[in-house]
Image 1 (cartoon, rainbow over the protein chains, first blue to last red):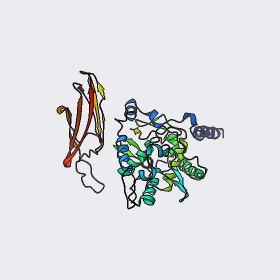
Image 2 (cartoon, rainbow over the protein chains, first blue to last red; image 1 turned 90 degrees about the vertical axis):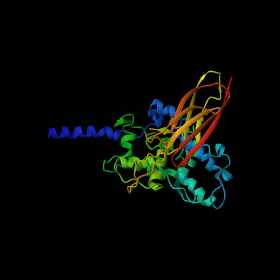
Image 3 (spheres, one colour; image 1 turned 135 degrees about the vertical axis):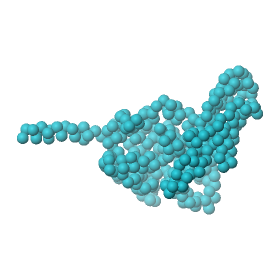
Length: 259
Length: 105
């Protein structure tokens, strides 16, 4: 009997750290930047070496270009992005009043295209959409993230948190298993970060292009051999919202560079 | 295609200056296949030239193993005030240019 009791006690002990580990306290939150090597940091810090800035330049042109059957440019309503878009990306995903659900910055751009420019929506991960969202988010560089503060967003933040904590895929891993419990360790050769979405859309050297947070989430999901949610699905938006609220107070870095 | 150029705005005569260039290009290798097995045709930048007041000071040949959005950094001697011109040439008649000026005292 005492053997069984000892085994039960040992099992409890082994399970305890996993149960106790959890969310990262606010003062311990760190951007993925702090996990990178010196060379990659230097690439992000120098605006003439950061390939993400090429997309920001493209976005700046698109901002002023008339499009759609309304023959309107973003600038015709929003004016100079340097002032009108400052801090906007730090609040996204945000609740859309008409839809009564959160929308991402990409979705907001496409809603603007549909409602105000009478233009066709830009496909997810297309160069133009990435360029526009990089340009808009770049105006918030250095601004502290406040997304998810809206009380209306609460149920969606909670939904995202549940998804973050939920095990999935053939490897049966939840986001939290790596990004809350095991950051600062390594997965194969690569550092495990806290998964703070401070610099999206960002330039990943592995992708050789700019990519959205949704692309990053989907590749994590295929990494644990789960069926990835579709671009723009409510689940991905909720996850994105939770991640942004989890990064509360960290500064925006768009366009970040990551390995 | 947009390019980002970093040349010091001012330099002393005889100074060795660093020039850094970054340009937008997909650099498709020509070795990859689509999901249905078709070869994605090669589309890369094949050469880069930098001219300083008309005279060529740097040239590079680029190959399929070079990453997208190629970044090139090189050095030259600041001899006189004037213009740096950059040219990228590639597959399918691709050509892109940029220029910047320097003050030499």
